[in-house]
Length: 121
Image 1 (cartoon, one colour):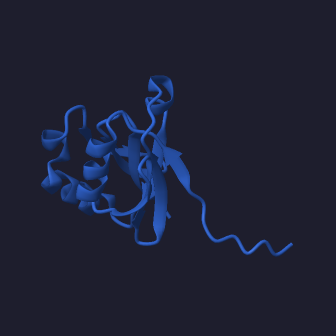
Image 2: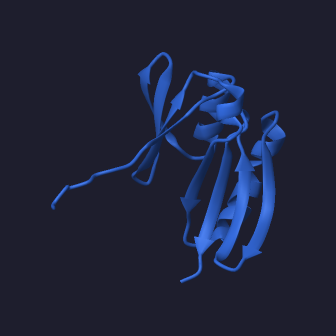
């Protein structure tokens, strides 16, 4: 069956919407404002929705995964941004080697955990 699927998009929340918007723009995403309580953030054709909505248990259990071609290079890029120094509660976790590939983590100001991965081929 031909479904002609075009995209899949996650919704994440934010503890402080304005701070989270600035964080994702500084991370390199382009913002398109949808309403006063939601924006679409896009990078290289991939996107997610950021909402002005906070539920602690939901946010602190939210995870996003962004696959990159060279996670070591991407980790060095993340280090140069110094987001963990500029945004309270943000944290960059160093590279880790796994049996399936390498990854590093970035926790956003609200507690959303981002995985940046390079899968072994």
